[in-house]
Image (tube, rainbow, N blue to C red):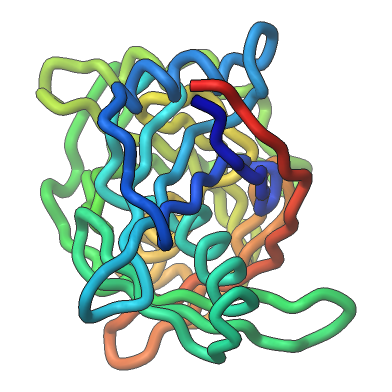
Length: 264
C-alpha cells in the first residue's frame, strides 16, 4: 500500500504527517512504521510520525509516534504543525485537536514575514520538586507529557557543554521514571529569555521541543526568575511562551518541507 505524507518542521523539530481525515486508518503497526521511516540514514528521517484523523466534535484527532516507535501523549511542535495544516485545509482561523493529553486549540497569527502558530498547551502540573537524578537536581513537570527540567548556572556566553547528549539518555531511563521522561537543561539569559538543551523521550537529542519549552518556562516562572512572556531559545531557533490566567501558550513559526508517497 502506498500512502501520501508530508514533512513539516518547527525550529528543526521535524515530523512526518499522514492525513486520514477522509479515509480509514489502515490496520498496520505504526510503531514499526515510525521506527523505519524516521531513520535518518535508511528512512525518510524525522523525530516522529503523526496521524491526523477525523473526530466527531473537533477538527481532528492526532496520534504521535516517536522515532523509536513509542507513542507520545502530546507534542507542542506536532500540534502547531497540525494547526497550520488544518487551518489552511479547512479554511478556519481556529483549530481544535484531540490528543492523548486532551483537547488542544490553536490558531495562525500573522506577524512578520511568516505566520506564527499559537497553541494552548494547558496548565503545567508539578509531579515532583527538587528531585535528584544522575547527579542533577530538577523539577519533574507534566504538560500533558512528562519533563524533567534542570536549571544550570551557566555563563551568558552559552552552555559549557552539550548536557543533553551526554546525560539525557541516562536521565530519561532512570528507574525513577518507569515510563521514561523528556529532559531539558536550561539556563537563564534574562528575565525574558532562557536557553534550553533537549533530550526527547523516544527521539533523543532534538533541535526543539514545544512542551519542553513550556515546562522550562514554567519552572523558571515558579522560581520567580522569569516574567510571564518569555522567549525560549532552542538549538533550532526560538519559540515564545505566554501565560493567561495560568494557562500556557506556545507560539512560533512552522514550515512545510516537502510531500511524497511512501509504501507501507
